[in-house]
Image 1: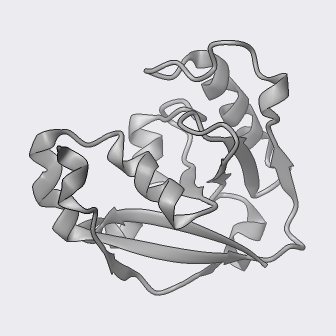
Image 2: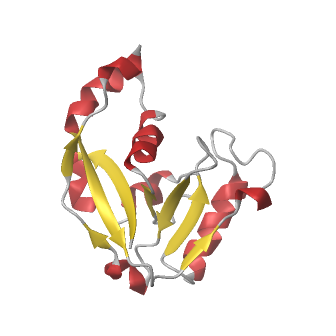
Length: 156
């Protein structure tokens, strides 16, 4: 069983695993219009991935966060994007079409429910892109949300 984490605002619990947010806004590994769910292999990476999108004014939001654990059966097929095979510059911000094309092609291909991708923040650690439209997605066990906060010292 593989453990993963997603941190979201409590008010988004109802659509936390629909892929709707990424479909509307796009992300590093998907174009607008492609629903996917981003999770991280560790809680600390999930927190860091969230934090880089915050501004100083978002400090009030930290009291409205929840962390959701996931258990992913090892039997589920996972595809992986190797950092060694990515072109230089894949970590740029905002994300380039290069990485968006990779993830969108994977999601549309429907070959697996999980794409393991390196974190642009810490390339030696991994995020998982989940395809909520894939038949195996329902085999992922979504745990109970638990309160989560970021230490206010992070805004120094």
